[in-house]
Image (cartoon, rainbow, N blue to C red; front, side, top):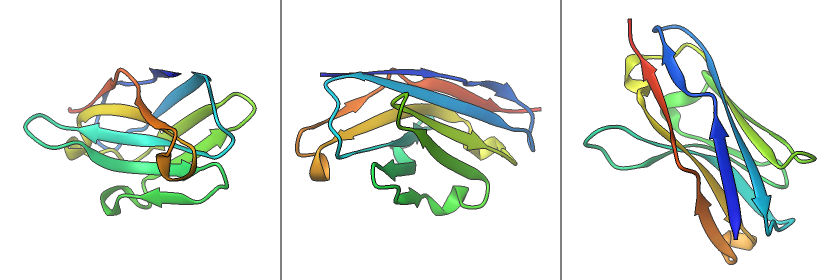
Length: 119
């Protein structure tokens, strides 16, 4: 099992910035991917950004150039730096851990952290 603990959500004005953090613990595999998904009210959960253990990243088109994902492998922690936030970024953000090659050893989710962009 893998446990994910998220932090860093909150209320921010349009154009502002926030940084999300997610620390993984438990049965971790060297081959993995960590990242962030989000779900707005009435919408499906969607990918925001992911980063594989080898360093490859993947971003949703809607956040490219505004969000940056990074990892501290020593701390098993992934970060999402969000800048130039827009009201449409408002959602619950979920940390995701993909264990093993192509998630063959399982997928895990954090409890979610609310991000609200509003003036």
